[in-house]
Image (cartoon, rainbow, N blue to C red; front, top):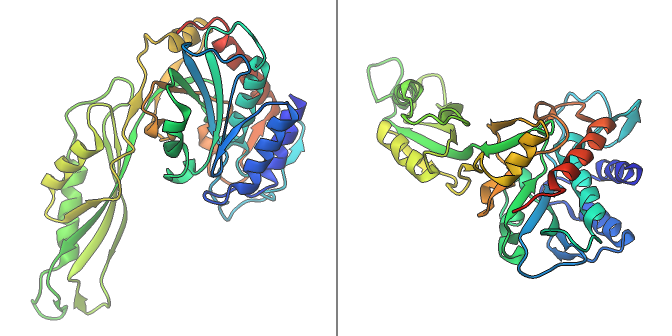
Length: 348
């Protein structure tokens, strides 16, 4: 795995914020070329097929993303330093999701030239995952063709995330009437917003998922007022909504809209909950290897995949988007072994 660790170090040393992934996409493509693997590209996305592709066989997609968030302010190390000490690699994107990307690439190269695979294998390094952008995986779906199963690389400690919550952000505006704060004038939009927020805090969606739990609503931003002596005539607030499989984002939006007097506008409803049955062969294969499964509260490119998928990868989600993000070399090596074991003998 030494070459893949070195590739990951180069990726960390090359800033790859969402919509600015070009240099890292080049690193991925150059590495595939060094392994004599032909590839296709679309924007900053790159994908490749195994050497002995047979039409009609099931298709397994190995996917992870090349973009990162921007570093938070309290890093004590250089986010782009790719410092490697005693098996610990520190750097932005090392855990989320560079480790998954290079490990899945290693798995793809491992199987690339095998003649008798029971399925076709495809590798895709996609962009704009961190912002759920339209130019990433969502733009590739038609180009990739029919996919039987996707293995999405994200830090899960190599346990199987068989479902993940959907994400919807709602912009809300409570309307009032301006007036002088010293007199009993106007209608305070801030109070109206607070009343709506209280109703949202008290509301519980009826259907609770066995794997994903309940639908979660969090008020994450609020803004009102121009100056201290004027009753605010409007108040805006933002709701972060995480849906389970019982509610599409559109259905959840309609319920929330009916609970409040504020105007409610969704930024998008396309990132719905996703999941795969426990009875699916890949989950059963994982269970036979001693892996466990869970429902993930975070979203990934699974949200835009119209085919079955499972999320699994080296690293820990708790390290993502934090200062001094790191990955252990041993986690990458163990992840490679588990991926190989999952795919060896998998029958779809």
